[in-house]
Length: 246
Length: 249
Image (cartoon, rainbow over all chains, first blue to last red; front, side):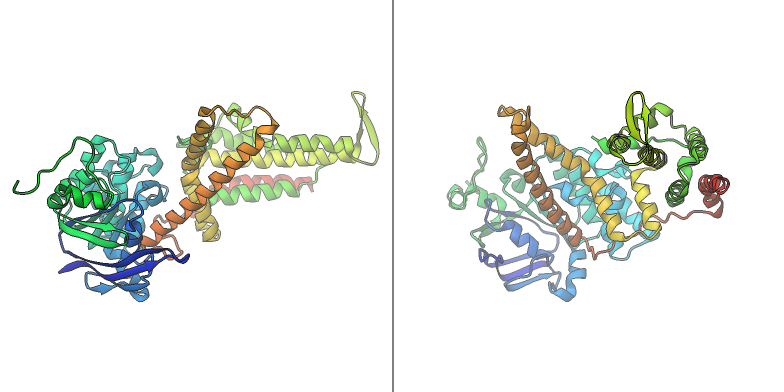
């Protein structure tokens, strides 16, 4: 079963700037995949297509077999859980409870079922005790975890995270990794934090200049310094990954 | 953090426990009664003040707190003081200054009515959490768009104030300090930048809302219904004021 299938996706912004030049990718259910690429490679543009915020200029996107179209937007948005980079953009309701309830409530979930989903989602990210607090009183790491809970409550087919490790201190970064690893859900992680990709994802894709330039086991891709350099990616100072089998 | 929540004083009084929609209606009705009172009936305004004093005592809101909050009224007070000076008509002399009599009445009218209205609002804000106030407004069928705008203002006030503070720090760490009028353009440009940043954030928030199935309506997550008894309790203030008005007319 394919969680996500993107084929020959191309997109140009209204001002004419071409951002994607035919992206092909398939993610199987239960996989954890990192989408790597330098700034400006088109990562965010690609993500915006996954739940129909942007409409493809050419090509198709399908989530769990459902093509992303105007008439399927509702189902698609339920199945693709997008976690934005800045949790302040994602958490817009007055309390954590209302925020986590927002998605499922829009899908028509009410009453006890809604309460169960909210508590369950917060439990999974270890933030249940913050349920009645306003989001802006939480630390940055806590806000990011609540942001993950807001989409978990929608019980998505695939979780898409935009730069999940950005602005986190080392402990918050590790805590988030533990949470993400514990989730039983397909995961697409957009990042240029290469060690984080290695830690969490078996498989990686490199998006460069609007096309998928490489697709393979994360360890193999990151061991290929030449490949990384070609796409403006590099491991942080002091890091080295031995080539598999070497 | 939480600068805008200073208006609210957590508590568990009769006034605190009333549903927000009851309090909103009560304050609104009270304000209408006050405005409808002829300005010559000075004693009526005194009685209104006593009524508000009773509410404040019930809500355990101390007088100094109310006085501090009244500072917001100062610009209007200054304006009110100007009227008798520049007013026309019959004149009288107070402490050697020639003042217009109709102007004095107009100033009194503005001052008395505005102060009573502001104090009533302060009491409302002091006893009702901003968030529930909005739920009350929603319950009273205030257009949902207005409620949503107010809700986002509440949520993002801190974020924007924080951004403003960072911009000020950035200006000052490069040696800028707003000391006189010639520095206003610099501050104004920062305000413009802040506006654009906030606008862009608004767009991102909208995307985040769409991603979670937003269709223009915020889901009603909390039903806040008021019992007949609670409505009666809340009606006590405007009813008492209306009785005073009945005698005054």
